[in-house]
Image (cartoon, rainbow, N blue to C red; front, side):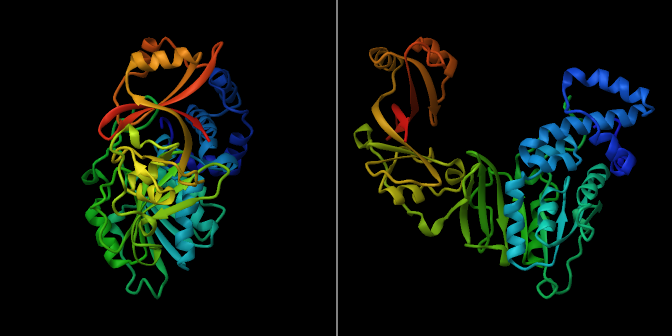
Length: 415
C-alpha cells in the first residue's frame, strides 16, 4: 500500500485523521483525481492524501465482507482479502467463547477481524503480526475493546503459559498464505497453496497445539484429509457456495473429532454436518438408468470434507460419480447442505443431441452447471446456437457431469 506506514496509520486513527476520512464522500474511481486535488488544497500531504483515498477505496470493497462495520475499520489490500469475513469470524470466535477462554493469543492477526469477533464476545485478545503496518492497523481496529491489543511480532516468539487450562488461555493461528515481497498493481502479493509454504510453518502450529490444548488454525480449503492429527476436528467452511477455508481445532475447541462441514448462506441459519451422520460407503449410480427424479448438489464444503454420505444417507440416494458432489434420488427432502433440482431429462452428453432437445422445446436461454467435464462453455453455446438470456423462448438449466464413468447431461429445474 504505497505511501502508508505505521505513522500514517496512527494519524488516520487520530481525531483529525478520523474526521478527514469519514468526511469523504463514497469512493468513486472517476472522482479520485479531483478529490485528491481538493485534499491537497486543504493542506494534506501527498502521503496522507494517498492514505485517505486508499482507505476509502478499501472500505467500499470491504462492505461485502463486513457490512456497516467496514466504515469503522482500516485495511491493507492483502489484509482485506485474507481476513475472515464477519460471519466466519463469528464462527471462530464462538468456539473460544463457548470454551470459556479468558485470553486468546492471535498469532498472525492480520487486520484483526478474528480478534475483533473474539473481543466482541468478551475474550481478551493479544494479537501479533510480523508486518508493522498490518499490526498497527489491527490495533486501530481493536480500539473499541481496550483490553485487546495488537503489536508487531512473530508467532515463533510465542511462549505458552505454564498452565494454559487453569489460565483459560487459547491460541488462534492464521498462517500467511502469501509470499512476502513484490506486490501487483492492486497491492497484493502472490498466493501460496502448499502446506509447507505457509508461515508460520505447519510444524510450528503442531508444536503450539501440543503446548496449548485450546488451539485453532485456519488453513487452505485444499488441505488433504490425512493431514489433521487424530483427535482434532477439521472443518471446511463455505459462504454462498464458495469454500473459504479448512480450520483445524484441538482440545476443548473440538465439537466432534474428525471431518465436518459448515455451510453459511445469507439469510439462512448455519448448517453443520459431520462424520456421525455420514454413510461410510455411499451407493453409486452405475449408469443413467439409475438417475432418479431428483438431483442434489452438495455444498462444496461438504464435498471438500468428503461428507457426500451425509446427503446420500439423508435422501436414500446414489452418488452420480465419486467426488463430484451430485446425488440422485426419488425422494424429495429439504437439506440445508445440498440444493435440490427436479430432473426433467437425463441423456448421454452430445452437443448435437442436446441441441436437438433444446430446439424441440423452444429453449433459447441456457444456464450451464458442470462438474467432472472439461469444456469451453462459450464454445458449447456456439455449438448449441444458444445464449445466456431467455431470448424469445424458454430458459433451461443443464448439468454436465459424469454418471457411472460416462459423460452425461441432465436437464433440471430448481425445486
